Amino acid sequence: GEISVWLIEGEPGKSRVLRTMALIASVAREKLWITDPYFVAPGAIAEALVSAASAGVDVRILVPANNNWPLLASYSRVGYRHLLEKGVRLFEWQGNMIHAKSAVADGLWCRIGSSNLNTWSLLRNWEIDVGVLDRSLAEELEKSFLVDLASSSEVFLPGSSSS
Image: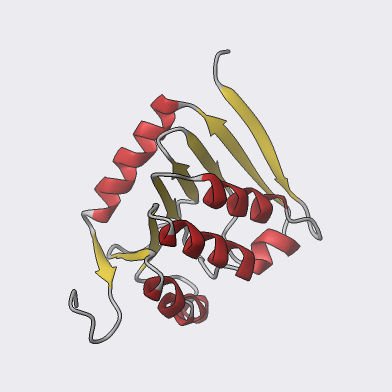
C-alpha cells in the first residue's frame, strides 16, 4: 500500500523500542503524545522527553489513575516531579484502567503495540510494536487521545499556580 509501516521487535536484551522512542522525542518539533498504562520511563526516554519539552514540543503523557498494579503506579509517580519541572504534561485517566500503548508525534509518526515504557517491558520482555508514518492514522490517534484527556485529570506539582 501507500503507508509506511515497520515492525519494532521487542527482544530481551535489545532496546529497539526504547531507542525508537528516544529518537522520536529528539526529532519531534510540535507535539508528542503518549498513552501508557505502566509508564516508568527509563533515563534515556525521560531525558529525551524533557529535552523535547524544553525545546517547545507539546509533550503529554496519559497514564491510568487507577492501575491494576498499584506498586507500579507508585513507581510511575516517583518520576513525575522531574518531568513536570521540565515542562512535560502528565494526565491521569479517571476510569477503571486504560491499557492503550501508543504514541503520536507531529501529526505523522505513530507507534502502537504491546511495549510499555518501563525498563522491564523495554529490555526484558518479548514485545511487538508497529511504527507507522501516516497523517490519517496520526489524526485518529490524536482525536482518541483528546477524547481520553476529557476523562482525565492533569497532574500538577504541589504549590504550582495551576493546581
